[in-house]
Length: 324
Image: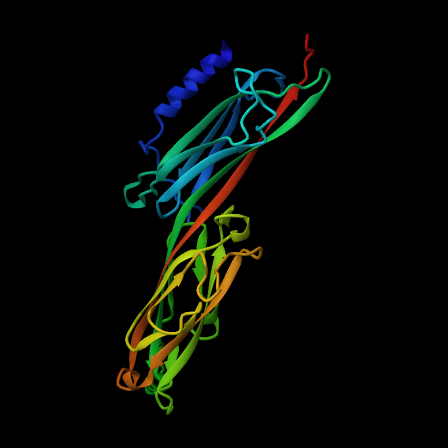
């Protein structure tokens, strides 16, 4: 009777908490969808074998973009715990939500959150044993990171003029949307701006730009299967006068690179065990166009998609009881 009342109260709570409501906005620069709460009820020290336990998993989007394909799964239940009817729990225990909108910081509106709930009977444990059972909640979701990199480019004459008058050149601008994946530009540590060599007889000037994607969240990017762990898709677009890609992920011309599941010329971008992946994009400047262009801005716009997961664990201590 006690558990039945808990179930009813929990269902009422879930029904009333599927929107943003008036909750204050929680915003993270390094997370997307988080598990804000994972509980087992009753939350006592020990639960008898054969009793029922309610699992609640609350997930919330605290990043900067909309999460889609959100799925919450329980692990450690299947073929051990039982349905309330007494039959064995299924092998796949999951609930899905179509999308979760991000918080709106400027209006102090929290991101969408949802609660997945299950009720199961504890496994049959022999009398005299106290067995700790670890149950894991895992959340997977599709997410997007938008990035912006802007470099200042000057031709060689303008660079010399700036040196004479002691003027500084604008440093690079790097922006990322809030989320677990970030881009950084380690190559700017060696050169914070581009000097286009227009005095050369070569029709083109090549500038190597090293870019790095980093996993800064509490989980890890996933792929479509076990062989595609950490795979990224999306586009990198180049903006600016007289410049295009010379070589970048298999692309040898143009102003857009596509990161594909199948790779471009067998080049596949994926986050590995090091939690980062570097790529080199060579930029090709047309020297004739930059001879009469002292300075300008060159920008790269990143639109990167990936599937991400995060997890939490609770422990239920089950006391064995005598079976008749």
